[in-house]
Amino acid sequence: SAPETRSMKALCWHGTGDVQIDNVPDPILEEPTDAIVRITSTAICGSDLHLFDGYQPTMEKGDVMGHEPMGIVVETGKAVTKLKKGDRVVVPFVIACGHCYFCRRHEYSMCDTSNPNAEIARKAMGQSPAGLLGFSHMLGGFAGGQAEYLRVPHADVGPIRIESSLPDEKVLFLSDIFPTGYMAAENCGIEEGDLVAVWGCGPVGQFAIRSAQMLGARHVVAIDRVPERMRMAESAGAETIDFSKDDVYDRLMVMTAGRGPDRCIDAVGCEAHGTGSVDAVIDKVKAAVHLTTDRAHVLREAIRCCRKGGTISIPGVYVGLLDNIPFGAAMNKGLTMRMGQTHVQRYMAPLLAMIEAGKIDPSFVVTHRAPLADAPELYKTFRDKKDGCVKVVLKP
Ligand code: NAD
Ligand code: ZN
Image 1 (cartoon, protein in one colour):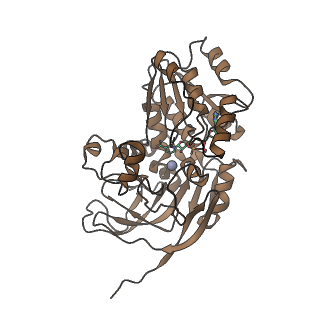
Image 2: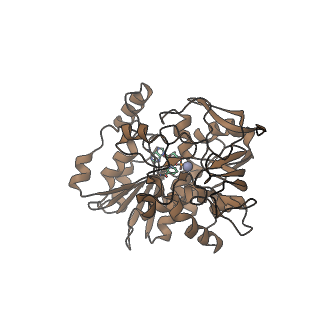
Image 3: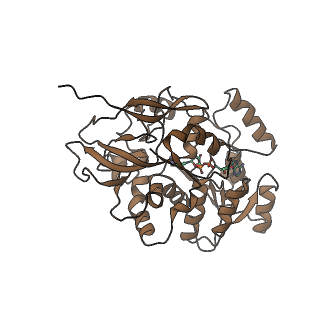
């Protein structure tokens, strides 16, 4: 007999600035390597805002969003060997097969086989990156994890089992932002004595700051304009610059005797704000009428500020063609640039070990906890940085 089709609640994209809770069919096993997970906690990410705000192309009405989930395995495909029903798992946002050229190099976000819509991505980018959960059709069209249930492809390669009794909030961010902040700091190639400047004190910036410290930065300077986010950075020992009050370049030059920060992290990405600077105003106008895809003020500023021979690490997401990037400055100053969607699978086990050893408690970043039904309202709260919102955890 035909299996009964059940429905669940999920947060769906309906258009720019419009997300709603819909009833959608429960996910089912589609491949023998799939698992189905009942979601217990799921977070909203700055990357979700790029979809919400209409920066990420190839979103379709009804797409289920979300890529920072964890929960309990309720079903596994025949080929799944590492997970079984009842396991408690955190699910990475990157989907990776584990056996292609890139996965064998542990470059999971470049997996060659996990994006079923690779041809669309190839036309846009030359080659396709990995499929991502809840992240547009160009990147696979996979339903996301802001839902009661999630289909997890390649279940043996992604999810990490949580054996300890650590609460969800301490391990949930292994799905994305802790590895992302950590890889951002690792990509800097920090040397002893380095000053690291981090643009953006959102969740990714917060983990980049703490990771830079763990990887040996002498001094971390964090840039934002949202007071509670700057305070959160200061509580980790970072010095802060308010870009709405001070000239970032001038302040950084004073701090470094004119040499510039050794390592710069752009944890802002394609929706950077400027305070009246000409480039940022032009970006805003062009983005509004779709003449540019990204607002790249922070990347420009980081290139200008970085010391000669320094590194720019870019966890912030960019989407398309950026205007007015001072590439001549980057070339002549001999900068190194490293970037990418995070190779989450590479970092989950070592970072879980750090959490279990009590070296870091990632739950410091959580400011809002709510049922899934409140997600549409909380997308706005998080986007507008209202009510002290830094990170939202939803409970389906
Ligand atoms: P967020 O929107 O909460 O934080 C961005 C912060 O940047 C805000 O606090 C904002 O005030 C600040 N900001 C804006 N303009 C600025 C400027 N000119 N100078 C300094 N700060 C400025 O987002 P988040 O969750 O922290 O994510 C940050 C970025 O990281 C996003 O682009 C997101 O898409 C990206 N991301 C990338 C990966 C990856 O795998 N590479 C993973 C997760 C998130
Ligand atoms: Zn994310």
